[in-house]
Image (cartoon, rainbow, N blue to C red; front, side):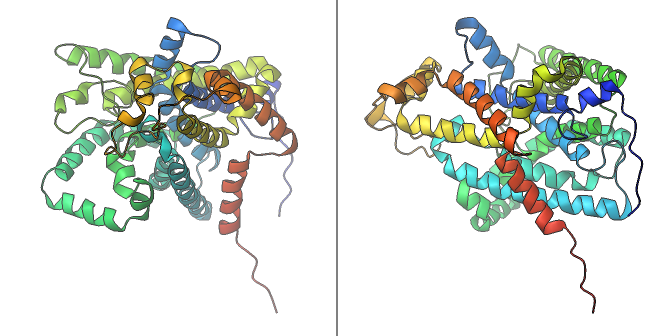
Length: 433
């Protein structure tokens, strides 16, 4: 082992990396923004109502997912050399660690999806998709920022269209549909939680074929010097331009205004919807629009973290435990649905009506949330928690994460994933005789 003299660090860099050495506070703040957006979508927007709540929910719809996915790529860069991509033995070790992390996220995500299946169509757990994103990103870990930008651009231009074609083949009576059926019959992820290989790659709500470009873009951003204000400015301007291009092109190219709203991937019978930029559609233009906004948010968070310092500590601590908070919010949402209190938080009228149908709920829809069959609503303390879940969960978030980080370096799930990766990839010295 060779001793290396510590580098001199400017006050600006020290503020950007507050917390444990080398940690970018602004990235953690951006992670909090991403999970906060998901809280708003599933629980409601805390402390506001009316039009402000509607506008906030509309803004976060799809864009919190894009930010979450972009930050996955940034995290990959931060854990594999930052601005200097690994090579040789270091690259092989990095690829092995990321592959193991991907496998752990797949298992953890499938367990979370199974334990929260009561949420039905109201929640698709993104963690197993994350695992496949990481696995598909392994071959790109040795690239520098420029090569990653090219890879992200090519995959954004090709991926959604290729996904559309392949899903069309799967839907038709082709050999590929037979292959998918056979794989699904033995795929433990599909059998356990309807999130097997083809679900995660093509057929699910966040298919890797469509969302991998955001991971590669995040990996490219993470290979840049994120402590540099000039780099942050370029990232922000690039994001703004991409967002304007994506949304404006979609508006101009769709002949008679925006297509009918869609959630999830574009239906195979509507190729014209590939020009859409609606939330979660996974089209090229939606990736440009929502991904561009994600870049702007990241640049702003990095810059504000430089200026605000300790004032953003609660947000940064919460963002550093994004995986734990995501899992907690999924479990809380499942509890709300089972207890019958989900409609108490001011959900859309049509969904509130569905939740209160009771015995009239259809029995043959496997994607329907498990609302109480007797149509009851909770009372007392449970009703209070459900009615004010946006505020309750936000307060819980700050109280829990601040207390936990006071005693531990990582969140519980973050530590679990990191420890498994370390245990399984650390080379043990060979005993000598």
